[in-house]
Image (cartoon, rainbow, N blue to C red; front, side):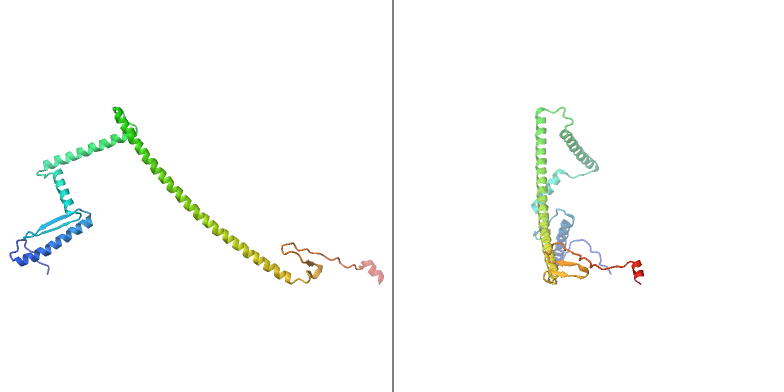
Length: 236
């Protein structure tokens, strides 16, 4: 069964009244904190108990909340009837239209348009305003260029470090290649006899520098007597 509906009226028993006050006060303050955090609202709660004891909560400060409350109350008086409310919003709309017109006119003057009717002092003020704007733009531009140059220098330093690492790797590979080259030619030279090696088919390998080209010498064939077919037939 659901909880029965409680009749909202004064609790006669003082003990029950004090217990209910404590529970409901804590619940109200908790809800106020949640409302301020969840909805980004400025909340202020003031509670006086039956014994004139003060309990309060403010999301910022109670003084700030009260000042804002009085200011809002003065700017927007209590609207007693629909006609007063219509007049209030009409005044608000007129103020906003005036502000919009002033901003548009100021923008056109900054763009160099509709300068007729301005006095010398007004033109001087407009020129000073433009100079201040240009100075701010130039400062921002210089700062942006400085940041870009600093970033390019940083990237250049990183590329220089990468090039140095690659140069070290290339030197290491060259040293390894030289060592392997010496080992390969050292084995070949250890197989030679007295600096010269006679190989089949009349080729001679001479002892030279490891990087020098190999000299191949072809021996002359021995002279032999060959008979023509006619001479072979006559000899028979």
